[in-house]
Structure formats: C-alpha cells, structure tokens
Length: 97
Image (cartoon, rainbow, N blue to C red; front, side, top):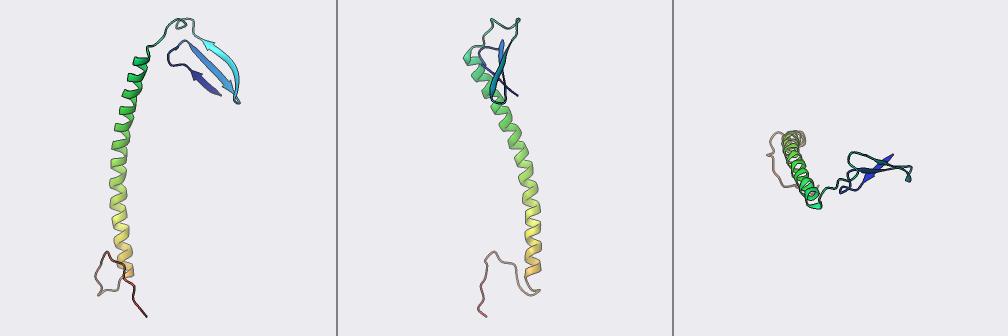
C-alpha cells in the first residue's frame, strides 16, 4: 500500500495498492486549507539539517570505534607476520629467494 499526497493540499491523500489507484481520502476539517510553498521548503530544510546533525554524530562515533579496532587488528596481524627481530614498517618488502 502506498500513500501519496500533495504537500500544499494537506486535506487529501491518494491511496495506491499494487501500483494501482485505490481511492482518495479527504479530511473534511482540512479540505480547504493550503500550505504555502515557502513554509514547506523551510520545514524540509530544517528537517534535513536535523538529520545531518544526527548522522554526523552517529558517524563520528562509529569512525572512532572502527579506527581503534582497525588499528588494534592491524597491529596484531603485523606482529604475527614479523619475526621477533624484525621491526614494524609501513612499506611492504619483496625479497628474492
């Protein structure tokens, strides 16, 4: 089921089922009211900013977790690969046999 509406006409909602039009739902209380386009744009902008802030804080925390766990696992892998007397380097070395 899909509900679609025109943001400027808050009194009417169109109902679709299986990609086919089913009916219109009209609110008698809101039938004549319209919302100016400017208000809709401002409300969407505010909501977008709120969501960006939420995502920014969420990704900041997850980057920190991934970074710390990634560094630890990378260090463990390097320690397993290197012999005891070798030093850890960022360069990958290719040795001829």
